[in-house]
Length: 419
Image (cartoon, rainbow, N blue to C red; front, side):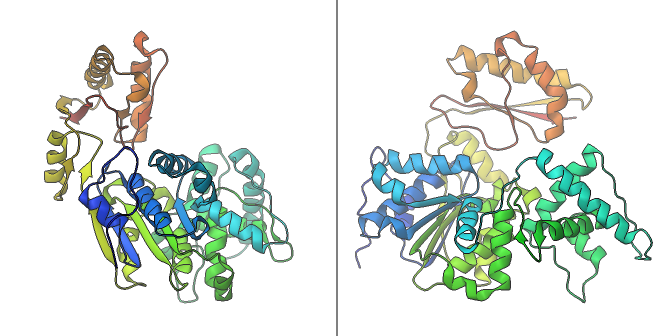
């Protein structure tokens, strides 16, 4: 079989690593990528190759985890020369969107979507009231703490998302409730509260009454596990591509596993173990390799080691720090400055950041191309006023814990280290 590329992309020359992935013939191909290593572009190349070899666009499924990533994938396909007409025919979805679309074909009616805490709060309070009444006079042996203030409700919804994403809500007869909650990273109170909430959401007589955030993924995963016959009702795809696989959780994995249970279905998925930032949704690096090897063999891995996000100086520093191959495809002189400061002096640590932003502007950079990376979310509380105090910012602030945007200009990163 001829494994030379048939799809010739517009505007780029793929690297040898990208070409190997573009022409991969393995059933399960997992891409171990570095940050900024053009994962989405590489998956778009693989789609272009499949189309060039005659695969109908309706038989290609592209899955991502956020609406923003979905738009990026569509744009990459267009940038590489795939016609808009063909792109519209491709099955490109977020995992949640795909799950809800699949469930819509199976259900007699589509339940309403409740996507805000304001909409979900009355149901949460009702479920808590029922749970409190249930345990009020019983000797259950648990130390339960049920509160209804905003912080408690916020914690409950976070715990609920984690329990559903990890499919940890069911307890076997030989399992301890306390140990199960501890392993899931939630309190016993929130565990029981979530169970009661689900009894309201999924009526034994009327079916699913509504769906909140990510409930489509949870409901589809549970349905496929509880009723294996539903596997035959899943759409048939010959090629499945998954971007940002490091954002996967157990519910998403079970959906992928079900799709791959069909013969002649191939998977190409890309992720970076160092970019797992959705742990509150039970994302874990094990879904980049180990969970697939438990069900499928053989697994073939491909590297994407060249980053397009920063220059070689930072690439070599990252390679030494992470003990893995990292190189740069850009001729940028990324500067790294380390400033020591005292934990209690927010103004001292922010001054180098302000200076760096001023230098960025002086060199012609735009503020919408610049990001301030914080190690922890709480740091933004005392950092934001200092940034906003600079009149040159014009009200701008964009604090990210995730990755810095790639630009055509040199990137100036400032890292602060406490004494």
